[in-house]
Figure 1 (cartoon, rainbow, N blue to C red):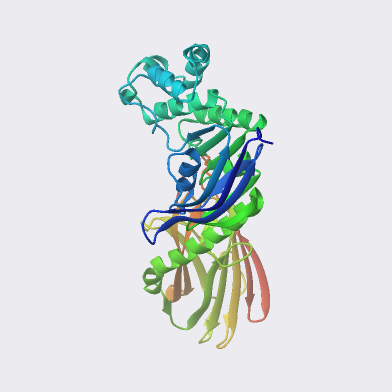
Figure 2 (figure 1 turned 60 degrees about the vertical axis):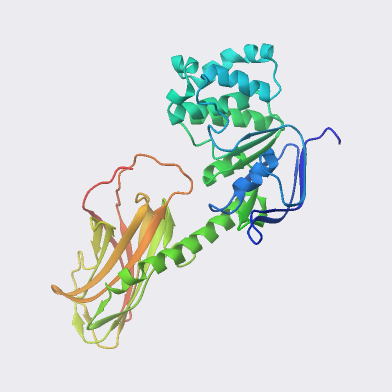
Length: 400
């Protein structure tokens, strides 16, 4: 057991000021062979946690027992000397990791091939692009066969070719039974490389368990938090667009498949829930939905009255209930306004606005155009149930 790798942390805290704890009462045990994701919002304490494990910082309270050689990439390029060449940095780094010159000489051809920056390898690092620095940072650590590997947001740096190379190296290390700790805001990365995850929030452990369970809980929390914040930010903008006349908009909200929300994932269904109260008899009301970006550019619109053949008369006191679904929404990451306008002929009789944000926590972007084939309208009006299938009218295509 003495030779087995492990990390054992008991009641560990890090206090930077008298009353500010970056970490508080952390208890974690990680055994050899475990691949653990560390997730949480910016400022949650993730990087402080990794720095303590890597030996770059010291805890204020508690114990940190690490049995094994730790290799860490906490910030790409931090250990690189700008005045030295790539080759010189490799020799310097190798010595710091306890490698002999002969061993570095043996590894050098493979490292050069992995870095793949041509003649720049023998030029000062200060002449490198950020992508070249990333390659150099990752190259050495991936060849020294670390017992405990700590990576903080390094896998997503560099071009696609390098990302694939570094990902393969991490997979090889995982298969060798070493301990891996990885911090990333990409939930795709966390799910791909880890079986266990730890969610840190405001310096404390919120959840520690199977990756899928922890990631699902974290994403639900973040979406609720960001939705509430977005509503607060947009409250005045929304209220200025509220108009009512012979129709009162009782309810206008956005939902995913589970709950009211203002943050939607790429390719998630958006459900638009509408409830209208008829204050005075109206004939053939037209309900228009418009989606615009924050610059006021129309993205697309849809009218309930499209293809309507029968005359619809709504009497005073009656209600209209509608659910409109935007299936597998693939708007690009941004904040959008969705405007619900009710017309009597050309006159606006009611109007309400909501805002929502599209996000992609999977960090998996593709160059796909904005194309919506269908919108599903499910309406209950004056005791009648009407279902309609419409096409969205797009003002233009947006390429991701």
